[in-house]
Image 1 (cartoon, rainbow, N blue to C red):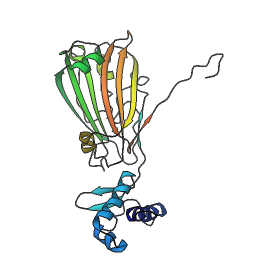
Image 2 (cartoon, helix red, strand yellow):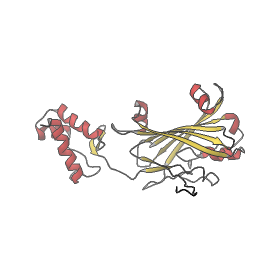
Image 3 (tube, rainbow, N blue to C red):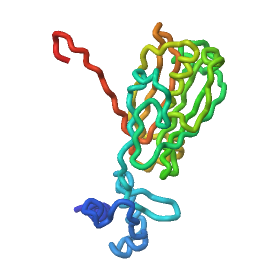
Image 4 (tube, rainbow, N blue to C red):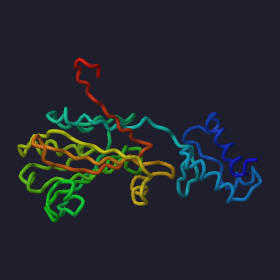
Length: 257
């Protein structure tokens, strides 16, 4: 026989699936649910935690529990190399689609020194001067960003190239392609390592992630036409708001693709 909290969770889950509790609807208060099911508050909270981990509801501090609205996901696509020669657009050189409005992107920049990890990734010495650009992409209707990107470039490589921080920046930090082009550096290929994992405490707070929602982490390494690393980046995205879309071109030979 199911525990009482499981029965309460099952009842609320059915109401959500049947539409009795539609998207964005506020659930009855914890005290009202406790009275309705004749249980204590700890049992109700346990049931609500189950639904929160499943991604069905979200807790808004000071307001209560609400049915989560499922929006069309923003798409991160790997077509930046083919678009490198095109001018930047308000949505960036990668595919960025939101249902209602363009993303709001904030960008910051600072000079740092390469630590052991960054030195290894960029094949330079520790303490080498780097420029770190941090991009935060947010939909106007959301309080928290859906992605945070930290992009690293060699200071000596782009110091003479213009690096404007504009409001039309791509949330994925694609401006480095233009800056490298201005510096006379041709981008050869990009390697991306994608991982899905639970967020850290800091990431959950920064991205406003509910329990049970994973993050998509992409470690990006960009090479010039000679095979030299010219940029590396860490992209962390909220798994419930972003989908990573990859396209692989097929070269037809005698054998099928």
